Each structure stands twice: as C-alpha cells, then as structure tokens.
Image (tube, rainbow, N blue to C red; front, side, top):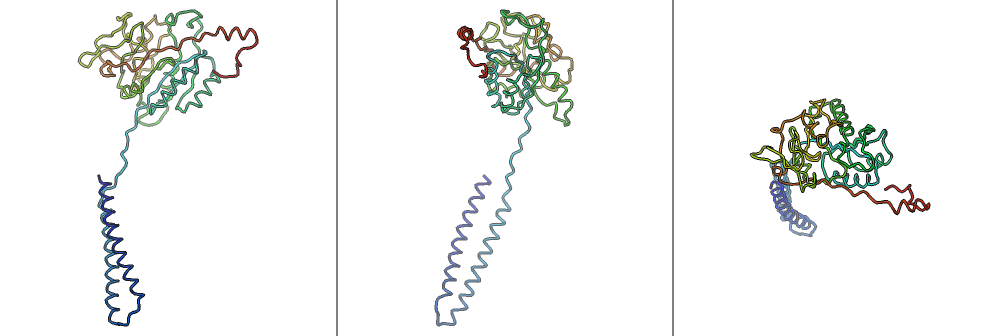
Length: 336
C-alpha cells in the first residue's frame, strides 16, 4: 500500500512540474521576442523569478513526501531447519535410475542435505560422478555390509535387515560433523531415512521439518497392505494399523518416521541393530529415543499417505545375456 501511495504522489508532482516547466519555457521564449516597450522588462523578470521559486518549492515538497513514506525493508525469512536424508544404496542395474528419480525429487525440497552411503568397501565412480552432477548438497560415504548379513541370490528381501550398517554410518557422520560445527543452530534439523526405491511426495518433507523428537505418518503399499499407519486419537498415537506383528515396540516402516537431529546427537548409542529379527530393525533404533506417547503424528493425524513403498522391477536380461554369448552384447562403457 505504501508503494502505491508513493507512486500516486510522484505522478501528481511530475504532472505539476511539467506544467510549470512548460510555463517557464514559454516565458523564456518570450524573452527572445523584440519589444519596443521598456516597461515590459520588469514583469518578465518577475515572472521568471516566480516560476523559479515555484520549481524550487515543488522539488522540496517531493523530497519531504518521499522522506515521510516508510521504507519497505524485505521481510527476513527465518532459517529453515535442514533435513538430513540418509540413503543406503548398493550396486545393481537399476541403481542409477532409482537415485535419479530420488535426486530430482530432492531438488524441489529447500534446505536438504543428502547423505548417500554405499554398501561398498570404497566409493564407486558411478555414484561419485552422479552426486557431483546432482545439484544437491550432499555427503558421500561408504561402508560394506558384513558377509554373513548379506542377502544371497534368490533370498527374499525380508529375510535379513538391509542397510543397517549404512544408516549407522550416516548417523556417525552426522554426530561427528555437527559436533564440530560452531554456532547455536548446528543441532537444528531433522534426520530421515529415505531408501532409494521409494516414492516421496514433496509435502512429506514440509510435514517433517518441525519435528521436535520423532514424527510419524502412514506409508502406502507396504507389508502386503494398502497402507500401514499409526492410529491417532485425541492428537496422540494409541496403536498401529499393520498386518504383521502389531505387538512390536514400533511397528513402523523405515519411511514412516523422522527424528530430530538434536535427539540423535544427544543419544550417541542409538543405532540400528543389524542382527535384529525380521521387522524389528526400526524398533531397535527408536526404542532408545522415544516412547509411543511422545510420537508426533503428521499428515493430518496420520490420515494421508505421502510416501509409497514402491520397488523397481528387477530387469530381465535374458536377451542381453544371449547376445553377450555371441559377442554382440551392449557396450559396457555406456553407463546405465
């Protein structure tokens, strides 16, 4: 409103100035006309003097009007808490495709730091190059899963917990990095564990951003059900809608919760147990951090699904394998 007022004032003064200026120009032009009457000189001088005084008065009025309008300072936006996303990943044919989809989601989330942890004894060239070109703030880590904890070819995905060592490595880095940073806000943030094969709504990240301890929400297409979710009554989580072992301490999917960075740093021993029984990996981490009464329901009291447990189908490579036997396989130098 102040800006519109300023524009109107300026318009009025400019018009007034232009009219006065035209009068002044006309008067000056008259000075060049021949006149045989000496008595005309004095009125002309008085007219010029009056016009100059009027011009000076207008200029002063414009300066005072501008000074009286309060300056519009840009609103200072509060600093958003950083969302630290820990993603374990491992080498497979669809790895780059999965991470590309995930990275392009994260590019739309402000103040996000991606911690990618490879299940590998070293950083691979593919992930190194991928992250460098992602456009995201990131940290690239690696740690291998112990051989006896690895799934073997043909094992069902639920047989052993996956990604425990990699998530713990991400937590270790966060604790060490944040402790080493000066400033009062170095522990402001949220930690989320985002697997590379899930699908995420952008709204989910804004829901979790103000997490105080542990926030929770539904996860779609998980556990052989349309969704699993915490059941909320009176603003509190009272039980869980799940099809398998609802008696678990925290029958949540890994995609269904976020933890305050401050809580993670304050509880140095909180970690994922790679030897936890099937379905208890999340509980092994959360048990040392929070009680069910302290859970913070998000997504309209856990009535909206904002993350889905999708998995890319494993590609069938029979034709590729047949061509390779004939020496006609795809060029391995082309990165997929």
